[in-house]
Image (cartoon, rainbow, N blue to C red; front, side, top):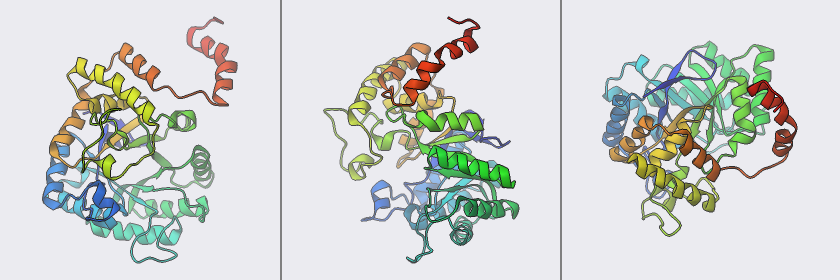
Length: 350
C-alpha cells in the first residue's frame, strides 16, 4: 500500500480508501439495495482494510440514514484502533432527521447541526475530513465556507473537501477561501473510471493546477467493471448494478473497456476489477480510490490492485479504447497549443 498527500496538506492517506455505503442498509430501501452489513460483518471488513494498510475510511451522514456512521464508529471502538492511525471522512448536505425545510443543504444552520450529529454517531471528537456532498443552489458559497472554517477553527474538523461540484464552482470556492483567508477545499470526491473519463475535460486540470486531491467514488462504475458483466452476460440477482443501476454510463464504452481489460487481466493473472482499479491508480490526479465491499473476498481482490504495474503498452491500449470523444473547446486548445507544448517538452519547434 502506498500513501499520497491529501491535496496541499501534510496529511497522507492510503491509495485505497474504504467506503461504507454497504453498511447498515435496511431491506426495502435504496441503501438496502447497495448493502446491509451489520456490526460483526462491518468489524471484519474494517479490520481487513486496516490490516492491509488502508488508513482512510469514508462515510456520509445520509448513508443508511446515519447507520453507516454509527457502525463505522463502533467498529473502530471494537477493534481498539488508535485514533491517530486512521483518517476518517464524512459528508454533509443530504436530508437528515425529521423531514423539514432546513434538514438538508449547505446552510450554516444545517452544517453545524449535522457535524454534531455525525460526531455523536461515530463516537469521535473530530473528523479528519468533512466534505460537502453536493452543490446547494440555495446557499451562498461564502456562507458554506465560513461555516466550514468555523468547524476547522474550533477543532471539530481538520480539513474540508467537496464532492460532485462543477469546475467553475470549485474554482469560485477556492477563490473565496483565498480572498477571505478561510480553510479551503483540499479534496474533491468525484466519479471517475476508465469507462467514464469526463472528469478529464475540465476538473482534472483544475485539481492538478490548484493542488487539490482527488478521491474517486464508484471506481468500478457500480460493479460494471467488476468482470461480472459483459455484452452477453448480465449480473445476478443481488448484484449492486442489478439492484441499483447507477451511475449512468455508456454501456458500449464500458464493454469495450472490459474486453481490453480482460486480456490484460489474463496476462497479469489478475481480475478485471483489479485492472480497472490499477488503471486509476496510474492516473497522476488520483489521490485515492474508494472501494466498498459486501464480502471480505471482494475487499481482498480490490486491495490486490495496488500490486499491479501496467506497462506503457498496456496503458496506451487502455487509453485508446477509453478515449473521450473530442469536444469544444478541447479540440481547439489542442490545435492551437500544439507547437508550444512540443517546444516545452522537446525544446524545438518540431
